[in-house]
Each structure stands twice: as structure tokens, then as C-alpha cells.
Length: 340
Image (cartoon, rainbow, N blue to C red; front, side, top):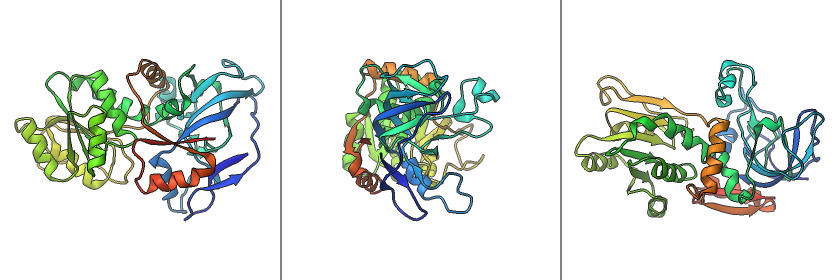
């Protein structure tokens, strides 16, 4: 079968022919119908060789949609032909975090398709257990695939600060791309907050407005002054940083007000730095990693009701290499999705 793999350090993803996998006991074989691309793949391919934690080569893709093709011995709970998406946080299932439903925070180390085991940038993929499958019924798999990360990640981040985002509040979204444009939709659907988007380029600012942002400014130091002006000098109540670089972390802190919350979501190898005299008093800063399977089920229902819609650009698997180049170059508005 065809697959897009990371094959060697310092190289870009390659389209290769590999053997079709077979499901082992308790496992499920999916015929992939759509697979979303993510900047986390770029993060993995930028890791140094020393201490690299994943196998090589490795099929990429951690936003899978597919149809159940075959059940391994003893696997149950789904049937051949079911349309599903894959919850990507594969925890041990035993530790305290997994017992609480937070496999994304597994204490023994989470694996994921495309981030530790072969992923969904292929015609077929093995899922470790039916527990990690979420039925989608007649939802378009191209739109549903990226619910697994591009929607689930901002959904958990927003839920972590939801009690703060009441009437009269302001929330800043830094980075209105694959995750950020979904965050804007979720904020509009879940809260009465005023949403301010920060990004670079008028096309991305227009995209943010199309997805529900009340205001959209260029992501630069002066944006913090504009947020302060909008809020009568107080600053934002919540800032969500979907970039995660030092420069955006600094901007996030500058946008926030007294007793505000900053949530760093992006994996840009940086973050927000605060101190008693260098940030607004009582500001809290947290990170947020992916989300819970129950939250993915909630998102599927929201998508079914039209409350969240992921903007996608599709590629056949034969153009998967180009898809990764377009993501790397920042040419994608929303989410790129490979359709085998």
C-alpha cells in the first residue's frame, strides 16, 4: 500500500510503498478515508537525532478518519463497515490519569498514530483498541478527520478556562490557523466573550473574521495596546496562544489583564514567561495538551449540528509530499487533508 513516511533525519516526508498491515489480537484495521496534516509533524521532523523517541521510518498522520476493514481476534464494540475517527491519545489505560479518562496525560507515556506508531497517512492503519474509535455516521470524513486534533486541542484549552469567559469578557486568540480558526468558532458557540484574533497577513485576519472573530489585528507588539484600548485599559480576560513561541508568549502576557489566564497550546518551542513584577498581578499561565475521548465525542455532535466546521484543503495521497511542503511554507488556510 502507499504511505507518507518520515524515513531519515534531515529529510522531508516521502511517498513509499509498504506492506499492508494486519490487525493483531484486540486491534482494528481501518481503511483510511481522510488524514489531516498538523504542524506537530513538523515538530517531530525537527527533533534532533540524539534522543529521538520514535521509530524510523514512521508513517505520519495523527488525524485519522476511516472505515473498519477488519477486526483482530477478540476485538469488539465496532463492526466492519463502521465509519469512525480515531482518538489519538493512546495511554496505558491503567494509571490514574487514564482511569480518569485523561489518556492525553498518561503517566507512563502516551503514544499516538504518527507520533510513536505508524499513522494515518496511508491507505490502511492499525488501531490498538476499539476504545480509541469514535463513530461519525454520515459525517463527511474529510471534515471529521481533523476534529481529532484541530478541534479537540482548542476545545480542551477553552474548557479549562470556560468559567472565566462570561458576559463582558474579552478573549484573545493568537494564531488563527488550523487550530485557531476552530477555537474562534468554539468560543462563539460556547461563550458570550468578545473574540480578538491576532495573526500575520490580511488573508489570515480576514479568515479569522470569517470564522467569527469580532476583531482581528496583526500579531505584533502594538496589538497589545489595541487590546487594552478595546477593554478600557484592563486587558484580555483570557489569551490562547496557538503558536507557542517566545515572541507570542510575550505578546500573550502583554495582552492579558490582572487576574487573567494565558493558555499556551502551540508547540513552537517557546512560551510565556511571567514574574511578580513582569506580568499583571495574579495572572495564571498553563499549558494544554490535546484532549479527552469524551470531549471528542462531544465535538462530533457539535459538528453534526453545524456548530463547528473545519476549513480544509484536500490532496490525493500521491500529492502528500506537496501537502507537507505547503504546510511547511504556511500556504494552507485552515487544515490540509490527504484523501487516500
